[in-house]
Length: 81
Image (cartoon, rainbow, N blue to C red; front, top):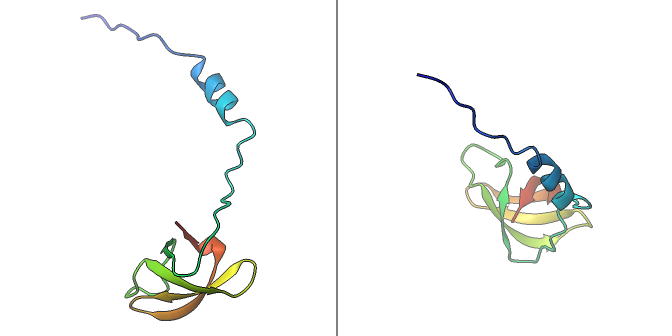
């Protein structure tokens, strides 16, 4: 039994780099009141991992309702759509 080697596509990393040049991974989502968002970490072990945005407190924080926990203040870095 002989082992054969498959050809390697050496242009794949270059192609990916070309496709993602200038791509900014930062999230530029506009959140709205009454939107449901996924929490990166629930506030307690009994709380849901989702929150409903109630109102924007500052440029980067929201007052939200987490089922099983209650009202919380969330940084935008603590959740995503």
